[in-house]
Amino acid sequence: TKGVITIDPGYKNTGSCESAITFLDGEQGILRYRGYSIEELAAKADFLEVAYLLIFGELPTKEQSEKFHNDIKAQAVVDEDVKKILDAFPKSAHPMGVIASLTSALTAFNPSSVNVDSEEDMYKSVVKILGKFPVLVAWTFRKKEGMPLDYGDNSLGYVENILKMMFKKPNGEYTQNRILVDALDKLLILHADHEQNCSTSTVRIVGSSHAGLFASLSAGISALWGPLHGGANQAVLEMLEGIKADGGDTKKYMAKAKDKNDPFRLMGFGHRVYKNFDPRARIIKKAADDVLGDLGVEDPILDIAKGLEKEALEDSYFVDRKLYPNVDFYSGIIYRAMGIPTDMFTVMFALGRLPGWIAQWREMRLRKEPIGRPRQVYTGATERKFVSIDER
Ligand code: SDX
Image (tube, rainbow, N blue to C red):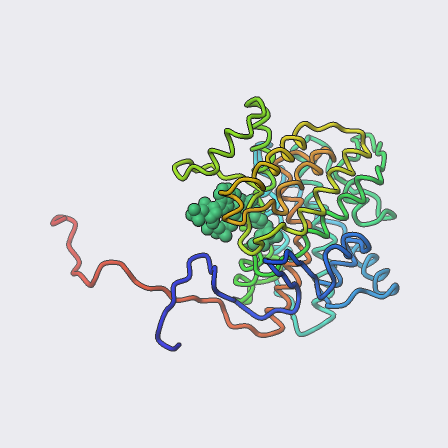
């Protein structure tokens, strides 16, 4: 109603927009991208098909898919000057800070904001960022590992090439592992979009000022970094490793999670929308079992995760608050099996979420949404006269 300001911290009861991209039903634990269930897409599609679907609204035909792949491959090169930016970072720099900076750098290399009303312009920006971002991800990882910054093999599929760019030995040696390629493709699909979460809302609000797409994505990366959001996948592994180091005493950590005076939270649990199992967590949990089984890897961390999940699902504190495992609870276990270090987990989340951010940014601009500018209820000092410093 006009003139009345309703304060809604964290926008728990505020809808920021109408959207036709992703549907969530938190009570039922349903997730659909453009009407297709996440279960079907994770089982039958590949990541670039899902990216195309989210951004352009339909699954691509064979011709559209081939053109999309080829146009992205043509963009999978990055200005050599980006290496100078990477050189400026110490090895201790957190990869999320590095990738946010490199994405901003892409803005500097591509300052003009895309003309969203031109399908051709928008398509060119989409294939440019989908081509270059994986290179930035691979170089961010290899810089920390002290490995050469070069390219993979454009004859490979999109996800195969990402793994090769990341893990190719300095002497060029690389053994493709189909299990890991399929697992990463599935993980990226599961992370691809999730309606108006914190980082997507950030991308939308930054884009609503008509800042460029790459600048908006860089802002989204920073928002994703927080441990309450995408940073949770790193926090989950650190939590599980802490419990393992502490003798696997899950009961102690369950008590800490319930103790209001203890800031500790069970990372990877709870969700603003899902008040049921996160459908992605179900799929990732099975994928973690399959990947570790296929690789013949026994990971005690997975056992601790399963123990913690079992206890939480039987504990009234969690049941009453409808706290279930979310997308971040099991994903790190698969990334670990791939040899990806913990501080790169959220970068992998950003890689997956890229198409969703792009799709949401495009929808917001095409709908000519107004600049995001909420109001407030002022609670500060009433008017007062200035006092010179000698009299303070
Ligand atoms: C992602 O929004 C999205 O869609 C995000 C995401 C996506 O795809 O983009 O799904 C990805 O970010 C998943 C969430 C990853 N974050 C974590 O796993 C961090 C741990 N989770 C919590 O911090 C929390 O559950 C949130 C942030 C996810 C949701 O927080 P809310 O909706 O603001 O809920 P809340 O903090 O108000 O908690 C409600 C109650 C509180 O207890 P009471 O004050 O009612 O007694 O539940 C408790 C909280 O203390 N609670 C937890 C808890 N999460 C909530 N208690 C212990 N451990 C937890 N993890």
